[in-house]
Structure formats: C-alpha cells, structure tokens
Amino acid sequence: MKVTTDASLFGAWVASSAETVESILDIGAGTGLLSLMLAQASTARVHAVEIEKECFGQLQENISNSMFSKQMDAFLQDIKTFDVGTQYDLIICNPPFHQDQLRSGQSNVDLARHDAGLLLPELLGICSALTQERGSVFILLPYYRKKECLNIAAEMGWQAERSATVRHSIQHEPFRVMFQFSKNANEMHEEEIIIHDERGHYTTLFSDLLRPYYLYL
Image (cartoon, rainbow, N blue to C red; front, side):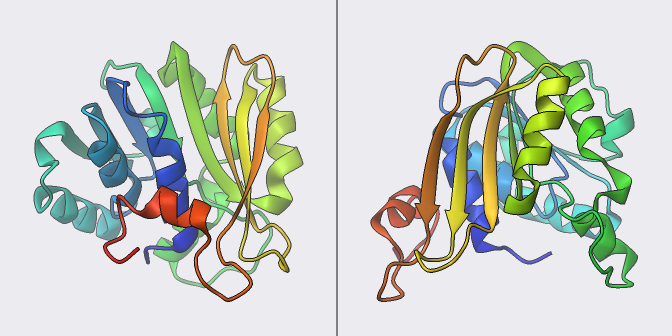
C-alpha cells in the first residue's frame, strides 16, 4: 500500500496526543507509517498488528531499518484474536474504508480498503477490550461515513472528543474525517484542515503538522 497524504496527516494529527502515553496499538498497521510516526513522537511501546502477509513483511523491514526499532513490535495476526495481555493508552486505526464500493479483484488490496473483514462495530468493540479506562481511540474514515461512525460509537459507549474534517482545498468538499474517541469526553472539539491554499501550496496548518515527518517542508 502506498503512503498517502491523508494517512500522513492523520499520523501527525494523532502524534500531538502521543507524547505522554506509555503504550500504543496500531490496528491494521500496513507498512508501518502510523506506527513509526507515533514512535518518533513518543517514548511509548508501540505494537503494530497487520493481517496481510506482504504488508507485514514490509512492516517488519521498515521497523528494523528505523531508529525506533527497540520500542516497536510487529505482529502478523487478525486483530479479532489478538491478545498479548496489554491494555493500551492510545489505539490508532486507519481501517478498511469502504462498504459498497467496487473492489479491485486483488485480495490483498481489497482486504486493506474494504470493511468486509472488519466492520466498525467490531473495531470499536475490540478497542473497548484493549483500551485503558482513560485511553483514546483515533480513527480515520471517508467523510461520508462521519455520521455513521458517530452513531455507532455512541451506541457502544464511545464519545468523540475531537474531530477534524479534511479538504484538499477550500474549493473541495471534505473527503476525510479524523476522530479521537474516549469513554469520558464531555463535548467534541471540531476543526477543519485544508491541505492546499489557493496557489496550490501546502497551507501553514498542514505544513506545521507534517514538518517533523516530511523532509522538505
């Protein structure tokens, strides 16, 4: 799977909440982008769980070649059966996005992009079992699933603490939404992040978030 701008933005957005946590779980870690960003932003123990074998091979390689390898562990496993006896301060997930969209015909790509293998209620239920009492869960989704996700989360006892909608530019409609859920949030702080300004350059907010991770900002 390719490194995408929205996933990079998501990792940077979450990183500001990772500085003081001790344990992090990345569900569906792919090739390790989010895990590595959070390891860079914290001293936490990071567990990266991936089900697809080819992605897992790249995940292991990327971790072993990084300066953060000593604080990270990779697991080739279905998160539905994952249990290492740990409850986490922070869980991050860039889950399979799409419900009813056309599939590619490539089983590994479809596993990563479509939610047939892990539905939102299942994901949030797993997070309930694996999160510390005051822990947080961060999820990135297409914007069209915002209301659905909020409704499912509320039914399962999760409250949105923060949300950020993401646009390519001021002329574009929102295409992603990022959530922070917890069990004890009183109200949701909402924000908007625009990636490009009217000249096609990265906005100041986007640049400030990504500067620790991009070499040329």
